[in-house]
Image 1 (tube, helix red, strand yellow):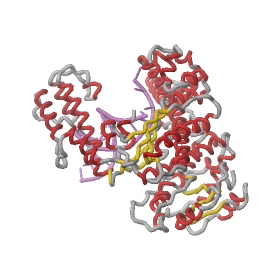
Image 2 (cartoon, rainbow, N blue to C red):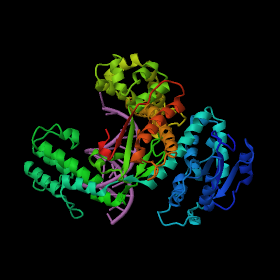
Image 3 (spheres, rainbow, N blue to C red):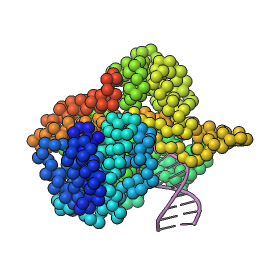
Length: 568
DNA sequence: TGACTGCGCGCC
DNA sequence: AGGGCGCGCAGTCA
């Protein structure tokens, strides 16, 4: 990979100062491949440079230290880019990947590139041309040109350059999307949300006070449990009151509360549900997170070791069904909500090359396919068996179904079993595109050594085995969850490119939400059907990108709706 | 008062 | 059952 990347895009390195500190290295990048097709641009001139490139035919991949810090400023200036290479995210992947085990990049001591991205500046009005004021540049500027060169070498010298290139491109596009989705925001109707809260809880109370409905449920609990001072929000308090009232419960978990055979049970469960709603997605949440009809979560790309995204603040990945009615398309617009059906089992079938399992996946519902193949009797059994294989069930009905699953789908089961055994030995496992798991903690490795040593006690051996099994469940799940995350990134990247080609009179459809295996597009109503088609085409493309011709279908459920609660 | 932990529970 | 998260609260300790 030289100055042009695999798609023929010109690389432009964005550096924090006025001149690249390693100009010779940049020329070398440029000369390796197509001469003269790599440039660099100071961060302060970035938006001008991006605007200038828009009119040219050449595709550009903008190379910068970290998207969250740079791109947010561009978006505020009204500028969007097609492709990027996020040095920090890509470095994290390459440094850990077993595919690039021999690289110089991996041998480096940890440095500034391995530190978390510098805290981004708070949203503030910026002029169009200095979206990155000097004070936000890191104190000791790491050299992006040298870093890019080092990363390109690591990829070129790896055992899987093609897969790693795809992974790095997908991860970087994900970073662009995370910033774009934050800037665009999820359409959120505060009035609907408020009406919903008022209906369930009563009118908004003064800060710190319980809403009327919760207050009356609390009073009912105090009466029923003969505990006049009970605070139902306090677990110890509630547990004590329940036991004094003669209920044999060991905790106040919902599953345990459900076993209580007394009318007080329903009061308890309703209190729990409503107080959770109030604290997690009540009026205070709305005040903090919803502005101008938009909810803007902070996505953390690569925030989970498996490659899944996390969010910080707002709990965007846990929006309860209770409040989804408040997610409403603007007038004249629609929401296209799509989720990949049984994504993880399908991914497992593809990566293990298990043709029988792929056959079961040939339809909208993989679990029904397993039933139709005569492996188990019911859909629910099929689901538990499959999830048990992926998560590592050791007991219960799910574990009991494993032998049948193994007979029917030997290759799929062998893949997750091998990942589990590797983890138990303290080894690293790697996803389809080359993201490797972290090494186990020193505690576990120490346990392993202690248990293997002369004269290890029975207790030490037991502890080591337990740790090993725990880590094996993690690595078992890692390969499937991580590869599913890669499929989802490619799906979304492909969808993003297709959406950029659509435009209506009222505007352009854009992604507004992503949740592991689900996407939401906000679109002018007239384009909704085209968007739905694009979502499906993108899923087909993602499957082909990752698994080539292997015949696994990635079925989607697609809904065109006015509000989120109408989907599913 | 603030940092931290464990619990419980929402999502996939 | 079993993997991955984030968050709010209560309680604890410095």
